[in-house]
Image (cartoon, rainbow, N blue to C red; front, side, top):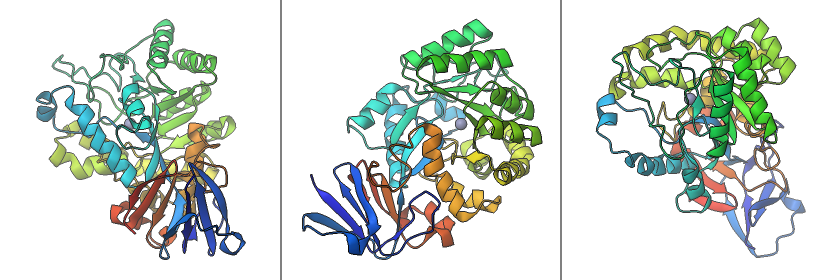
Length: 413
Ligand SMILES: [Zn+2]
């Protein structure tokens, strides 16, 4: 088995410990086998040596909220795009994500099992994927693409093989729908517990699904070796319903109040903030032909989102990095770290949120998320020290080396 030795790098291992000089990282096969003082490592001569030239080696970054099968595009374009074209687009999106230094993602709806298999089998290159298949949504809810005209225009097509339609109402229907998603390959269940920014006929503060419906979904997950549930939840009441029902992670969490924070701490609920989502809606509204309602709602929530994030962070709620990539371009994911810092998070904590905590949120902490001996060799080398300049991570030219599963995916050092 080939060995790789990474030297001349600052090591930030993802645990939150101080960065370390003078360490080397050694990879053998798909695993990390050594992360310690370089002087303690016995070179055998078989190693392929990677000179990081004073850059920083970090765990591969993890984005716990992406949509790999889409990049938001104008309605006219969606109407004139043949169905299967989206799979070829996704191939690019997956590659761009991996090249940006993101080696694992949790797909928050829209990607089917065949895409994951294609990555795993090496047909296409991309990050390791955890799939939700499609999100459960109430009739008229955040995931219901029925427009005011009566036409159905989902942001992503659904109802085809491998991608069950997500609409369901009432306890028995949500049970059945959860089972359909699991049958289609869901590893995590996604549910829309409130309205949102991009949906035409609702608002982020509208509560969607009752406590009983949410509890039934959580219970169905528990029956399958503890499959977790992630909830798009923006309004305070919907957030609290979700947390009380035992949902694992709150996505967006725009209107988190004090009571919600208390409940999240009690239940160990994760927050996946996606601060980049409303920022990019406003940046690209004209270019992408975003509906005026989405622009207005983004403006309305953007400051509140930052306030809620800070409140949750200060209280000690577990925060996992997520972006909603797909709303913005894939491969721009790491902009989220500087946004989290600007909203009040310590620079090192933004890295922990994007590595260790993100892996824990996905239940993959035994495999990825930190540079530790025995873990899978998912790692990146970036120029300089990102703690001094988190913005630098957003420039893909600074992501100089990407390794996933011990395989070199990028090397521009
Ligand atoms: Zn999303």
